[in-house]
Length: 293
Length: 96
Image (cartoon, rainbow over all chains, first blue to last red; front, side, top):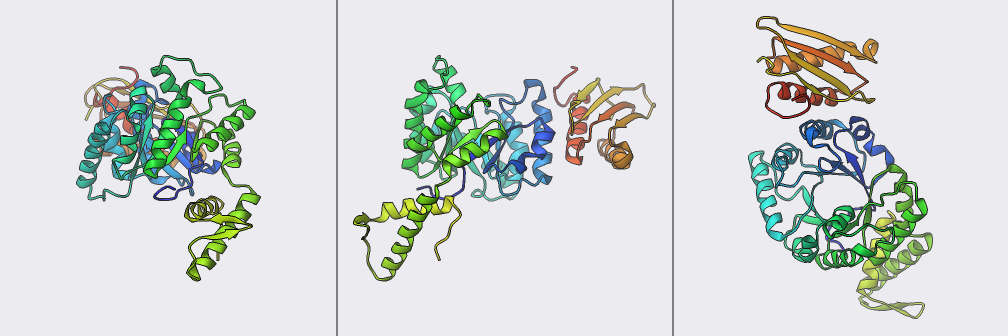
């Protein structure tokens, strides 16, 4: 289970230099909005995108969506300038691309906290999402995920990872399967969320459904989205079914009654119900916005 | 301040605005050419935003061309800020 529950079934990428897409970002119903200053912005428009995203965050209503900003890497001429403009606005999270080591995260957090100190901001509000998109990042992912309380999600960047591994991306995802599972396990061991990479073919809805079902099966919390058309399909996969919700409700209800009676472990229909089963049931109910009275 | 170079920002896309800034000879003041698809409804507001931004950067001896496609205020301000900073060579962008 994650430390702090947030619904992150979908994370919609929005190019940071496109005002029309930014101002409409909240209407598609994605759980998270990712305003992108990195790969979606041409090198000679980085300054324009930074000013636009900074201004838009201040006034645009993204409704219930979590708002994240993907900055440029600190090794580029743009990363530090991105932080100077975005950190004072305290979006929900900063997403850091091509994270390769815990030392890198420590350095990034030091800079973020310096900016927060200058603006009298707390160090515990805005979180950090580390993107794992290189072989080195995959090797170091557990330390990246576990060593910092502000890292509350990790994500896999499939396109960059295949490029770094010098392999061709294939729809079956075989080349990045080991990385996917290693990243999921690091997130689970650290009790943080883990978001799957984008599905690049927006016209292949069946392929998107299959890949999302696989991502859910191996433990991902949600999936990145490059087109609003993909949101409903992913939400359907990650939202519990009516049967799952009924079962979870029953488990939690029984748990509450048994706890009140001082009973720790109990059985439903002959099956033992203990803490992990209850935790899973509670997670399903949170995803479904259901409370047990 | 006076623009050092010609600079541009924004696009012709819907909900965006494109600004082009050029330096003028000394003591020329400001020459503004503003057009907008929503001039009738929001022209006064657009002009006010542009003038306030030019004032805040104390821009003079400037030729500014704006072609607006219905940009919101944060977009107008971001695009003009970018064009001004590029024209002052504080930031790199197009037309350099």
